Image 1 (cartoon, rainbow, N blue to C red):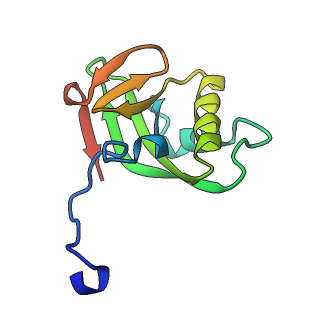
Image 2 (tube, one colour):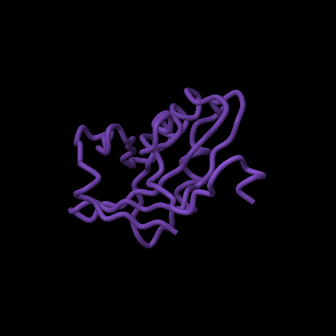
Length: 126
């Protein structure tokens, strides 16, 4: 299989947004139980009408980041119109009263002005 793919197969997934070049393609949005990330995802990505992105798509990633205070975030990634998707997600979260975040240099930067090192968070990957 490695010959077909042109190199070794990567078996370990990292935290979305932490690999070089991923920062602009990933956002995190807060959610609270009993809501599931999939429910909040649909609401956030559809809140802004008409949609801002001109092309591409967005997917829910299998990653949950929990801050020390218990606030939980799910990851989503997008492709195509990166700026449009960033704005769609961030504005949708704001409209719904949810905190959004991005990762830069292993620090989670929250839309409420806080910055939290990823090392201080609990990460769940599925």
